[in-house]
Amino acid sequence: MIQRIQTIYLILAAAVSGGLIFVFNLWNTLKEQIFVLDLFSEELITFKVIPLMFIASSILALVTIFLFKNRKLQFVIGRIIILINLFLLGLLIYLSLTLSGETMVSEKGIGMFIPILVILLVVLANKAIKKDEDLVKSADRIR
Image 1 (cartoon, rainbow, N blue to C red):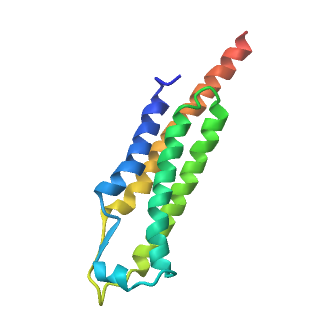
Image 2 (spheres, rainbow, N blue to C red; image 1 turned 180 degrees about the vertical axis):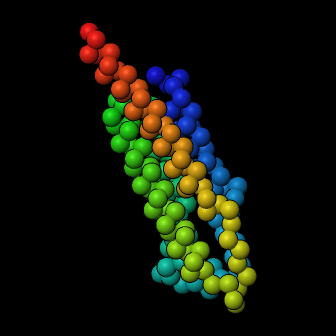
Image 3 (tube, one colour; image 1 turned 135 degrees about the vertical axis):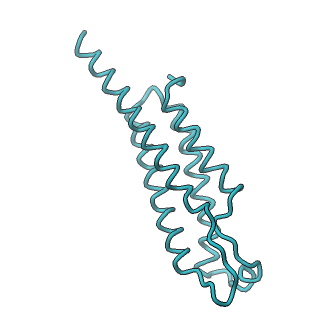
């Protein structure tokens, strides 16, 4: 059923993961630093990977909404979304710790906390999915 509370949580998680990355900067650096990097640099690769992982997380959250008939698969995909965001959080923390600030002006943004919010919303959605699954199992025992 689409009108359940986990749908609200998953829509919010998709909006946060897919929308807020364009509103908040993950970090601000001088544009010259990006142009100095060569194509195979670690930092340039992560600048391409991070938005793709946020968008993948958002798409998975939207797909999970429409799997309401298969609650077990919905729960598993929720766990995959959590793993993606944990990896993103680790990657963003690593980049913020290794970001040099002496020669170039850099500012670490509040956008680094987006994965934490997405993880929280997906955990709440998984809790509601589990509650629905337990309710269906208890109704099957009564019959």
